[in-house]
Length: 265
Length: 266
Image 1 (cartoon, rainbow over the protein chains, first blue to last red):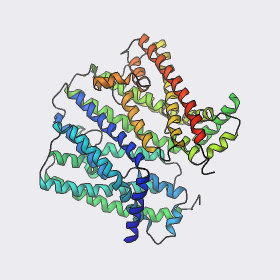
Image 2: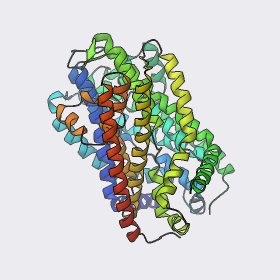
Image 3: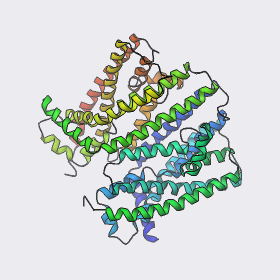
Image 4: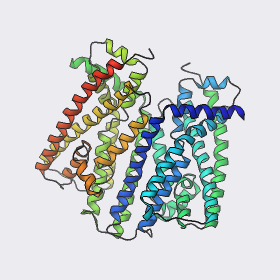
């Protein structure tokens, strides 16, 4: 355990070195959020409700959704794995007395905890600016499920990223695939719009997939559009996915390492 | 001179064909972005007739053409290639050759998008045939010619911006954050996702002083017939002006950057 804590610590130091880079990333994020706020504000100037959402609800959906996303993001972790595999850096890790998959998990925790605090602060500022249109909730049970969901969501996303990163064992140029997978994840997660504005069948399908539990589902839960009981059910599905993804990751790792040729060393 | 740079372009096109699966993989994400936008607007227009003067068909037309134009003119993160040349010291090799680095990267960047460009054309044709009922197609030759000229300039503005951001690598070791933020900002201010008039009035005014609006919003408006031919010509003139300004900045930054360059990594 101690050696993995050292991984977190060194990663923090590395992140501190590139603190300006961290900050510039967050500026882009603010524009991402503003883009959605502006579009929906323009829409609600000529109507008072879209598919059962009023203005305050949609604003809360966007702000809380993004806040939760930042808490769960791993900032393109698949590219790091891709680099390890393609430059042969992986060989270094293989010769050390650590488990590479565990190493990745701790590296990511160290890597995102720093960015996370910056992102969290920026989102709080946004929340403060839009507080008039933000619905606050004080339901303890809801908060409990929400927090557990965010925690599980972080690892669901991380395991997905690691799995996607492992594709590098078999292919060389991956950016196109990474980009497409990310966009699809966002789409199916309800980042662009609440999924229930689509025909019901889409929501039913996406409830079986893991992506919805990283944006749409927790945001709906927060808005009270999903009951606490349904929330628990969602949490169960999310945790089941977590287990499935963990085993998938272990299996793919085993297959990938057989394919690994240590090119680039 | 032409021959030399055409050889560079030929090499790069061959390289692109090597990674053809990667290029095709981009297409899935491209489409998802467009589907998200069309879904939102289709749903919204069920409960209202017009948003800021845009009818349903106009809005769908707007997002589809803006999507199409922006993917035709993107440089696909070319700044990373330039940053890599600088960080890994590859730049030293290129400096030794009897060529201008800026012309060299312009040639590589242009050849680099050629395969992706053709795929976007095919994708566009599919999308257009899917939405043909609600799209407005313009067939006026003068408008199309003006539009094509604008898009060519748009590409070069994007390319020059990529080169400039790449040059930041002379001074900084991490450019990802700046790259990412500028990309989102330029999409925001160019009207790639929605007509710029949806923005608060002061931002709309500010946008006319930046190059981005002339790269997507004005061409789309011209094509949709929302602005006159004369206004389109004026837009083109300002776009060209920006191109010249950016070129000048590149030359200056290049000179400063090269003084700072330490050939690390070689």
